[in-house]
Image (tube, rainbow, N blue to C red):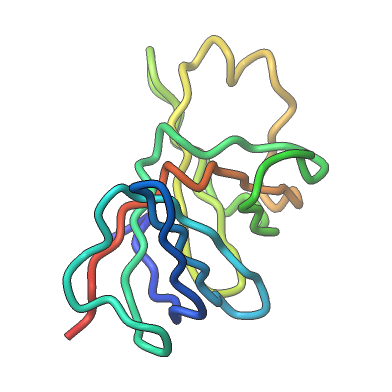
Length: 130
């Protein structure tokens, strides 16, 4: 399934009713903020991270102020009448980005283009791997 990938928990910090979880995904650190971390999540364990395909932002350069950015290339484009899905291959996962076709048509995205896929720390859902 796209937009699901496995990462290793590096650090868990809780304060003021929120929990910051730092993951290692290949050579990239990813951060997630959650109100209630899943039961069984522990430093050193593996978890499945899920990012809804409407959340990531594609750009030609890394975006400032966004904690999570993965480098990849456009693998395929599925253009529909109203929605377009852009499939991006990163070093360790295939992720998809869903956008409206009007916005896609105003962009210059092409297959094999290098892109940065960015998403906020609050856009990550976590499943504990057992």
